Length: 457
Ligand SMILES: *Cc1c(COP(=O)(O)O)cnc(C)c1O
Image (cartoon, rainbow, N blue to C red; front, side, top):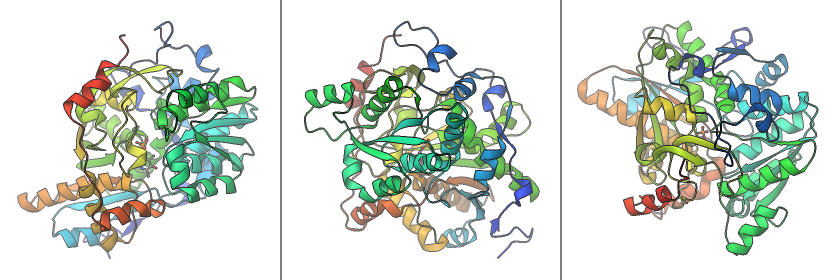
């Protein structure tokens, strides 16, 4: 299958064409993302303070607003070769089904055992921990994708990996847990009695099934109280967007090779890492005035941090032990209604994307989950891939944009990020098929409670 320009169904790069550097979009931003603050002093976190929690090289990357390109260390390039390049697919079948003149492309990141893009940053973070001579790392996981990616990365570099998994997922997703244990990680349901913050939360809320914010607090406590350990995070942070830029750089190399220029670039946004990574090199061109693109972030209507949140300093975790970040947020106490896109349930958003959104460089849309699963199924039936619920948010908006083109007759080129596979989410698909899925949208009054609890900075 190909069109008149001979664009293949799947565009793969050869090994020698793979990205050799990560691109740091902060270097081209006029308004830099706001710095992390020390919650005690309200002063910007220094490198020395941050290196108690994070690896030294990662602290450097976190604070670096100026270096445009970071060479990808050879060891990481070698690991990337096990599952990269990821295919850039022309969705000919979907276009035909929709009857749209639009050209649709997606970059598929689900082609590795962890099943999502998270491995791109997990391997980088494990590499720098190993370089520093650490024994191991701690982290939290919600739906389980990040924990799985990190356990794979740690086993590759022979590092110990302690994962605090939100209790409800630990119980509902036993297979995710077993994949992590297969790669040698220890997995603890959170909140647990293994940490002071966990014991406090259990005392206050006996029977709680946990939250991401709470699991972060536990993982950070274990990292700072055990010599030879550091904490790692799978999204939100600047360093994670930097590593995920491999998605965008690779996409751009492939598109340039065939002379394709996207008009619209779409991605789902949880903490913002896949979207930030995909759009980075394109956003760089827009920021430098070399090209123009329309960027759309897609979030669940049940957790609408960009479309309905406040741009303010907030805590990143429930226990308030982490630095504060300025971001679009619903408040660290906000607990979204149960939604099957576990990876999109975080209360805040990457500081980089928050700043770009606030400056008007990017749009955002919120979509309801039944509409998301409708799009997921439509996509699966024609394109073959069974998408993750998170990724399906991007599919929803890509289809909506393609249908708009059908009305206007415009042949726009649409690119979206297909972040992962949905094999561990079949309970969610089951709910959808049985008509048991609901679309909860928080009221203004409910959101106000979260805003009232924002720290006064
Ligand atoms: C974690 C996850 C996301 C959301 O995280 P971002 O940091 O916003 O990219 C999206 N899709 C999948 C498959 C995920 O696992």
